[in-house]
Image (cartoon, rainbow, N blue to C red):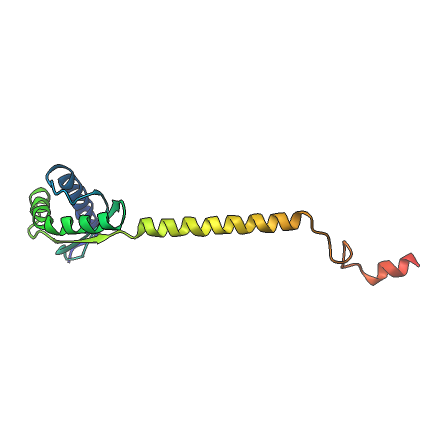
Length: 145
């Protein structure tokens, strides 16, 4: 087994190599605006998972995923050439869920802002239901008499 520092270094290098190769060598028309966001390598350096995002709608995402699958062999051989490891890791491409999660969080924050604004406007003209100080002690009432 290798240490995790070596796996992280290899993952970082794989991320750069795959991104550069996609930009320079792969000329597949199905490949849209793909961004390589992260890469992770298993502890034995045999398998690499490459995370990516695609700018566009669902059909562009699907066609980019198909283009990445068809270019997997070229990308793996380029990773092998540029990393110099004994065994070139197999590449698995996974669509990154980060943009969807960020969009979901933004929607929830917008809902919270609207709810806060509604509470703020309702509280602006509100008055106390009883006395302004409902916790008056009974001794204060006795002293007044």
